[in-house]
Image 1 (spheres, rainbow over the protein chains, first blue to last red):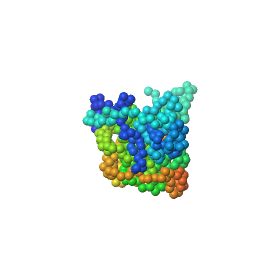
Image 2 (cartoon, rainbow over the protein chains, first blue to last red; image 1 turned 90 degrees about the horizontal axis):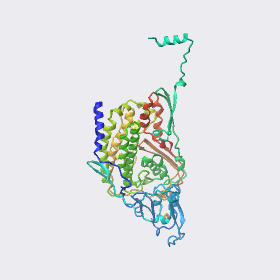
Image 3 (cartoon, chains in turn red, blue; image 1 turned 180 degrees about the vertical axis):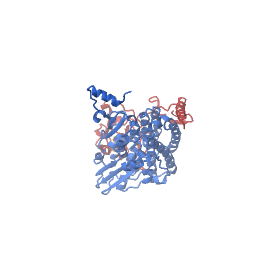
Length: 165
Length: 386
Ligand code: SF4
Ligand code: SF4
């Protein structure tokens, strides 16, 4: 190709994009849609179920206070600490449950794999920013709340290019 | 017109003396990085004679975190999240060879579907890494469009990996024994659709960047690494392939199901910066075919992960396995003493081996060619320091 031809080709392929739709995701007006309700562990197959790995959810009436999640996290981020809870559960005689420090957690989900009673899962919630470090520590009570995440945007591809819509 | 000699003679008569500049006075030492926006967490000291580089001393080590030592205090599963930190853009390939080595030590057979998913994830991740590398190469050479396009198109693969693994960048997906979870529903169609669209985009990349006369002038015949030198220096990945040696671990030492996939090893002969930047592009094209081929040949259902005890441990022994990462051969040497924690882990990375070529390539080049040569070596500072 000649030099001039190369320049014309390059400019042409760039200017074409003036009329093609933009690919940008307009967060926070738009939010991405995720697969499922977050990463979970399938007791029957012994593998995880695909899903986004965001903040955890703790199912209080399944957690036995066995600390296996905290032991798993010990060598990873030391994000899980076991704390006393006020309520009495019959499966949880010691009345201890995990509390997670999101200033340390790396969202690997290996604590979910470790929990033998399927009490700890992950959710689609990733908006965890706060003004103080203390607010990043989620108590068992906070972890039990199901997050409200509304994501409905995905990548759409057609003849006019790709966009988030 | 008086010649220089006449002028010298004249000044002698006047009692003046001309002192020749010594070489030390003439050379200027420049420290590029670690705060240079392009160098990454990395410094190289160069000496300049006018506009030409006469000496180069790479000085890595600013982000050394002791990954290898950290491995000795954690069990094999707990090691996965921190091992992918050196190259978060290529995290599936980093944990791939680690998983292969542990599997060999513990003696686990990975289910067939698990092997396929693992290979797909690693190919998708290779694209993410190469696009990121290409974006930085573009902005290094002052081509802002080539920064924006790959950064945007990277989202196509990040989106796929997010659906597959649950995380956008640090996936922690490979695990000794297979993968953490099965594919979500509808993943195959989504993957094929986005990969096909990306293939169309690659043609535009070629028009605006690789065939652009400006880019060609800046990179062609710049920093030529001959075939013999490449072999002697032991460079790997796209750098060795750009010098005319078709060496790819996926072909030379196939792991998992790569021996069932047909693909060509992409290489070029010229060994200059252009070839070193074009080979990753050819790799991206080839990766698109590999992904489609993998999706095609994948068994429809089946196990994805072999059962493991909570604290997997094997008999005392050692294993060395490597994979082709975005930056070349990436090997893990793991020694086990029979306990759940590895006795020693040694990581051999492509970045460190490629940067050894930098002093040889830079000498005799102009300073303005430094970015074109440096970043074409496919170097990731954090990985080299690990
Ligand atoms: S996701 Fe990983 S880092 Fe976070 S609490 Fe669980 S094990 Fe720890
Ligand atoms: S969440 Fe699971 S692993 Fe953690 S203490 Fe409760 S039951 Fe045990």
